[in-house]
Every structure is written in C-alpha cells, then in structure tokens.
Image (cartoon, rainbow, N blue to C red; front, side, top):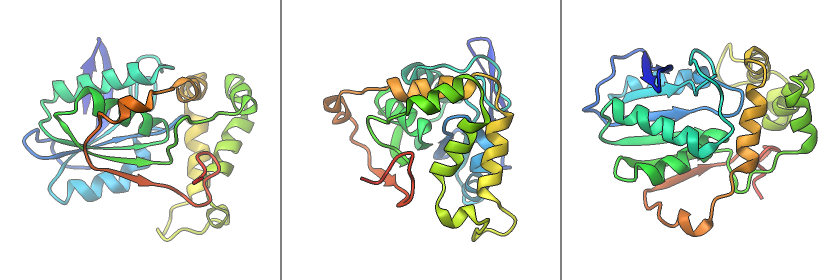
Length: 222
C-alpha cells in the first residue's frame, strides 16, 4: 500500500494481509541501499500469525518516491508520520543497520506507541570507511561488493543457505545495484553522522533485543 507523507508516496508491504490498525503492528525498516523486500519472509510469517505488518521502503528507495535523506532523525520523523497516519496504537519496530538507528530514534519520538525494539547489525557510533563512502559517492560496483562481502558470513559466500532457493549474497548485490544513483551514499552519510548522546538513550525504556552476527564486519560484535 501507499501512504502519502509530505506529498510523497511511501510504499509499505503488508505481508499479504489487509492492514488493521487495531492489531499490534510490526514495523520493519531496512538498511542502507536496501528496500522492503529484505523482509519478505518475516513480514509474511508475522502477518499470518495475527499481527499487522508494514515493511517500509524509505523515501527514495524501492517503490517509495521522494529523495533519500542523509539525516537519521529526519527519516525517523517521516516514519513517525506514517505511524500516526495509519493510526497504529502499538508497534514493535524491527530495524537493520541504518534501519536500527532509525528505530532507536523512533522509540524516542513515539515512546507511547513503540512497545518493543529489535535491532540487527547495529553499533554506536557506526563507522563508515572513507573508501566505502568514496565508492558509494561514485556509484561504483566496489561499494556494492564491499557491503556484500563484509555483511555476510564466509558460509553464505559459498551460496549455502538453510532456506531453499535463497542466495543471500547474489540477492544483496542485485538489490544494491538496482538502487537509484546517490541513494547508498546518502544512507551511509546518515549512518556516519548519527551521533546520539548515550544519556538520551536511557529514555528508551521498552524491551530491546539486539541481534548480532559473529562474522559481521560492518558492525563487528566487539
């Protein structure tokens, strides 16, 4: 479905079920250069378990119009407008990488609505190398290769996956390649510039689950 925010259409997948604002909602927020399709299996699973689901395309990503922002707080405010427009009463927010930082901001903005957080591949501050930024700015294939290589385990590089028919590294590369020019660079700048005061994080009181990959080189477990 499409939600009009600031005269721009933002796309959200519902996991194949009609959206119902009366149900507890799970909001999925993707990472840099990605779109809602990375959550396709999770959104279908939870939609069939009785939750309302929205897997968003951030502005300038996937099927959403507008321009990709390089400001985490601005993006979070936009997602908050989506929540309010859909009249969501209770939400679990699940975010990956850039999406995790957005989720943190969202928990501060809508602390009476966000009841739980799930943060994947996250650290603060989240470092971005100058080489990766330079390649992303030039829309170079190397930027896509670096992210794909660093963000997946050695096991997955061999094409192995417990889900039949899913090739994680190949899918990630194609998704990054399909993003509009400049989108990945804006996303990475947003990640690099996000520097939250740790004292303010203490205002987030909802239960929070951190999911970290032991071989993730983008956000190392240390």
